[in-house]
Length: 457
Image 1 (cartoon, helix red, strand yellow):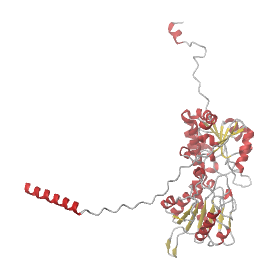
Image 2 (cartoon, helix red, strand yellow):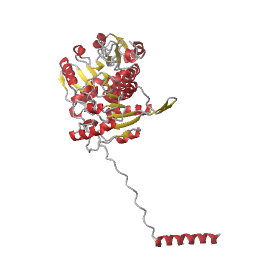
Image 3 (cartoon, helix red, strand yellow):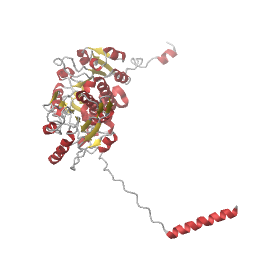
Image 4 (cartoon, one colour):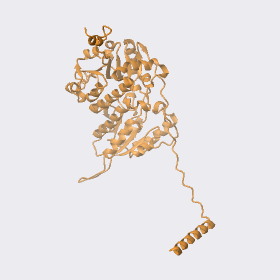
């Protein structure tokens, strides 16, 4: 063997092997189980990942497999996923292959097949149904991530599925109300005469409420709004009139949500609402408190005082409804002609838009946890954040419900940044009275310089 060959020969038997890279993290996208026949349907039309976002995630090192027909009812074909680089597989194969599984609604029936894997879903761990899902996932040995438990802090805004889906729900509520109302929104001058604009009242001015205000104004409706928190500036900026309850109480609660009101406030509130509702054509309610029943804002007596043909869309129907007469997932007309809509699937009624927003939230979640290591860092970083206790990332510690067969305690929500009190502009101080002596001196100096300039010429 020549000296050159000896110099290039490996020192140890395995030194000549090509360096190996870590196997890619496999993401599995499960179908929600929607079927046009309500008796056969297991979920809604949305899907937790869309082709455009999946394509971008693969650049971070993820491999993605999608259950066949998972995106069909959201407008995304299997061919679109394949074109984006995803593998389209039967459900059983997705469950077997993927390390991290995505489904909007947690597929409890499949938890035994997910032992040792991560499931990322809309759980609602503070609610009774969510608590049952957490218990079942814990027993099955699944690491369960609740996307609704993201804390309301600046760094986590891009992960907030509650806000993104509420935006869709607020817009869709106006669409549903418009269809049920059956009349013009904007003032119209026609060959048949004049028609006044519709009157809309939005109760609850979070993300969904603000979206409803914007869409209603775009249709040309006259909008009034109310919230237990004083967000009148935001509503005015969107063109809505603010409805004030003549009672002083701070409505801000933990995590940026509203808190439950006192009985005295509720009484004053009902008096105000009855007057406004009697003049209103469309009411959209969005008020909810995490882990608590939805606050009652519209009593049956208030409904009785509304104009026939008016419409109420209750976005808080899942928690019992803001209207006393709301029926979950039903739309019906009361004996006095008020149409009440209690659909809980408003985001799914805009499945393509809602799915695209949800998928982007999921991509942001992965990027938040993985850090600079990209796909290879997701699982190690997730475990590290939990192992570090209070020093670990608060987002990871908030969203993980259970791990290794043990429940994970949710940390208390961070306190929201206090709202700065409104400052009444102070009128400018009156100008000081002119000093006669000072005015005379200034005048004489000006005159002297003026004469000197003329003589110089």
